[in-house]
Image 1 (cartoon, helix red, strand yellow):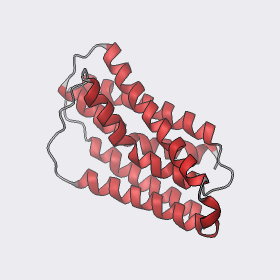
Image 2: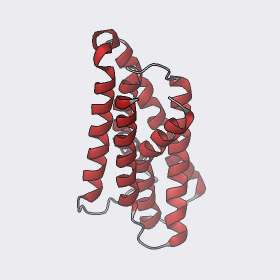
Image 3: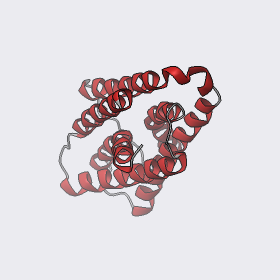
Image 4: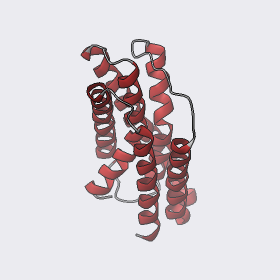
Length: 183
């Protein structure tokens, strides 16, 4: 996987972090930087660790499914992409995020990184994946997306369409899945 594809994948995975951070920026615009950075670190950490866990799970069974690897990787990425698009299009009530609650931050971090677990599993089915680089890039991009999402909406001070970012992220994941399948 080349670095551009990895960056696009990382950006797609970071869209949930970005969306939740945008919501937090709107609902709690006066948080201290310490809290913002801890929130972003938690998102980045879990987004980085989930692909590693998925990859470790996947390599233990990859020899059983090696002939179907491109199809499985495509199916996983396409499923996640479609799910992101559907979730973004649903009308749901705004999530109130208490950025100072450790429990809330950890739950949101895990919830937004579940898709990264499946992506990590798909990494184990592909050749030429540097899991170390992938973990680093995904974690860093998620951290930055969280900081940018919070500060952007805090500065703008108006309703930001974070669900548009999730739709774009879903489309990118589907395209990466197609690239793997056809590549």
